[in-house]
Length: 142
Image (cartoon, rainbow, N blue to C red; front, top):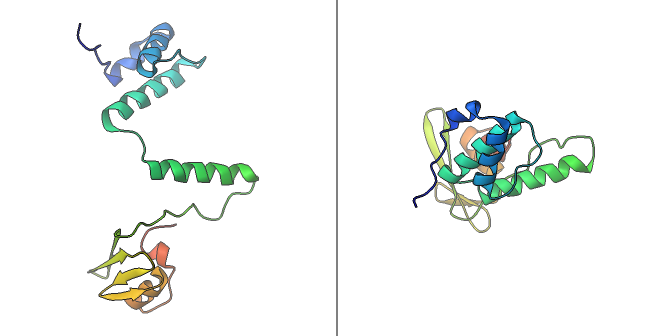
């Protein structure tokens, strides 16, 4: 006995609701929930792609959980999305007027051009000559 055949994603449209429930059970090792055919197709397609290419990262899961918690606290939305935690050794790269700038995250602060800085905002000011939001300048927030 070999491994079960993988169903091509484009074949999902051809399956009946009963066949979709069987495919769900095969992909998830659990009975299919009581969902519409479209939702079952979406769930199966996600699971197949997750198995082939890997799921979302632990960091992305953390950000999504944090966002969902802040959204469920009240009806008003938070002003900005949660920021990613930068680990030491991470390199941030920004092109400014045709010149590349690289910042390395340190245990405490940042290294830019051989000097230590306490904030990305200070580095953004050195690069641009004007006060700017450092995390936004380096693409870490919107």
